[in-house]
Image 1 (cartoon, rainbow, N blue to C red):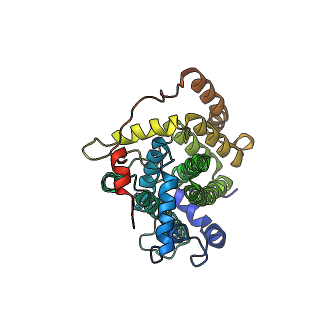
Image 2 (cartoon, rainbow, N blue to C red; image 1 turned 180 degrees about the vertical axis):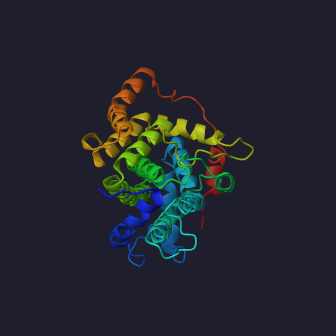
Image 3 (cartoon, rainbow, N blue to C red; image 1 turned 120 degrees about the vertical axis):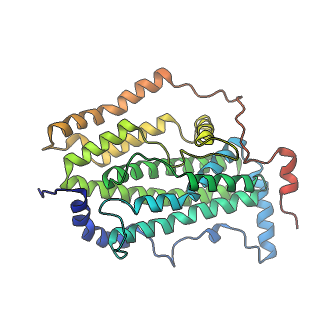
Length: 341
């Protein structure tokens, strides 16, 4: 077993491994999908017909689904915050060393993630159901306000967080896609699956990083995992707010809608913990420090503890409860906002 004195040494040690993996973790730009692949081509008459068909499909989407989709898009659009956050991590930061493998990963990951906000933004605009200016105000607020993932500049905690968050985002996009498929919104179904596919691949990459860290700094990685689970994972858009609202006020409402629509619930939270425990084989890790051994026991018992807690306390919000956002246009405006040619 290698002995390392700091996170910096571990991340530098893993850099050759990452450099060799980059061609498999990231897709080639020229052959990768792009937002235009799922967008009407308005340089043609057929493109305007596609817009009409898209709007017809989108009219069938429940307001809750549209609201979750807007919230997911806003989260994706706050990419500058996430990119700058990762660029500050110990051993991963790229200041003064722009050609490091970790720097290449961060830029490549950001380049792929950037398409998600683009395609979702474009789709929502074309539906004619969304007050895009109010949405844009929320996006600007979120980027300006930032967030607090409680990971500081620790790559261990951060990559545990991103492993969790990428899976959560995949679940949200997949479930929005399932609802879209049920109501016949096939365009949203297909683009949701495409975005979810990226999130799945990115989750595998971040989980791989933690797996390699656990090979060389096992006890510290387990302690970091325990720390993040005790803090609880909050999504990166935790500070989301609309015009005139307090920081985080809109995100609390968004969680209500995501929960009652079944897009993302406490049960999904538990499933993600189980996924990470299994992928990192936490149960069978050996030669841990005394503190890490206690952390191992805590982590392995956590899903059952959450299940009992959810079964006792969890009550879905009344579906009749009105939760208002500035993002969706009033019903009377939906038709007039639609594109007509």
